[in-house]
Image (tube, rainbow, N blue to C red; front, top):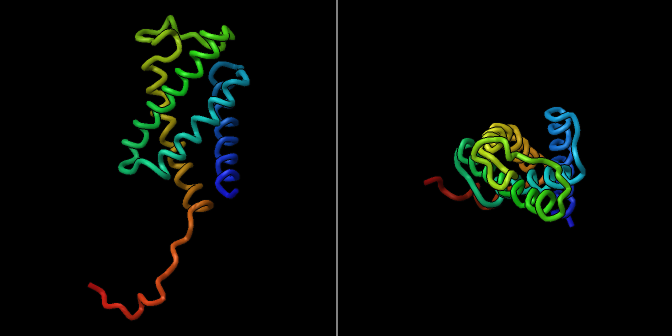
Length: 143
């Protein structure tokens, strides 16, 4: 149950932040963007706390590609299949089906720096299990 609570908090933070970023960028948002943002931050959180390690640069690069993939999948269903026309990047060079483009992958890369730092901070301060000291370590010799 603790994991569900943890993931709901991260998802909610992503939904709110993603929507706010879009309102600041475009002046409006769509409810599907809140879901996309929640999934995106939760993905970054899981990637950084369970799967990948390494430099912040590497983590952000992987995160930016993960967000781009999430946006492509959401865009494919929301904009192409269901024709909700939430966004269209067809006029931007090197777009893929008008749903994603390198320009926004770069922006996601930049936004992954605070997002990754936030995820690692929240995990370490709130959700990680404290390491138990070995009661016998006092008696063991240091190598």
